[in-house]
Length: 316
Image (cartoon, rainbow, N blue to C red; front, side):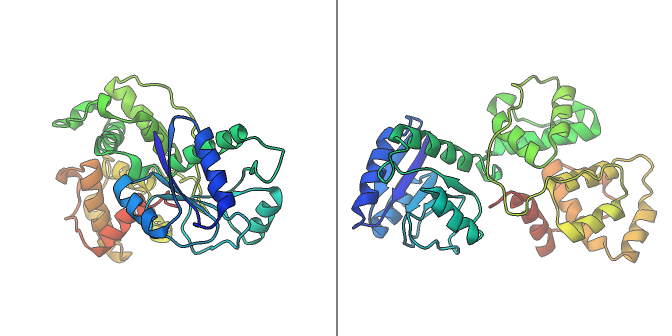
């Protein structure tokens, strides 16, 4: 069930009627709440905790939830955070494109055109809502799903499920739809599938999921097999992704790794503090054992910044 709070100006009778008819036509999988007052909208957000807030026309609201905005012919406020913008015609969409607005969907309003019915409009709007809910999956995954993801990645590198001694997450508690979706966007799906195979776990086949992606998003490219110094230089340049953390984790498990030589190189390249921060994150997420740590980890502001890189990588 997706809970959507529709917010429109109090005196906008056209949008009030449109929202009422749209809410009625939306499928049962979507629960619609309506508000035409900023104070009421803020209260409903606090009490009802909608998944999506759909804003119509002009107005700034103190609301929480993933935002969908329908400008309805009014000037678009580019400073508002949003997941998708709904244009009611190709002409409005063209105007938004000229303003470099991203993630624009064209869904005709049956009240202003005879080329669409409310059933068609509701079907397309439901598709947009689902795309919004499938975007940035990290905050949507529960602790069990995240923990299981990291377990699979560790097993994929170590090659034996006995490395998971003490792990307690059951596959029955895992949202594999979100896990696979996240893994695909972070380009770690092959490692996830390898981990499942090693653990002997069969799950439903992964299905591609439509979603919105951040501006400038590019699929992370693996650097598996490269040395740790090269990996850290890449982190300096592009930030830390989960894939790059996994590449470092792999490199630390290489049997030929000369730890003294590595530490000398890191000192020379002024990468030691960065390395210690990454070790801390690998400890936390991938349960890196001390025996594979050439030096002591560190948890500082840089460590937290690097971890935020992973958490916010798909954030819009």
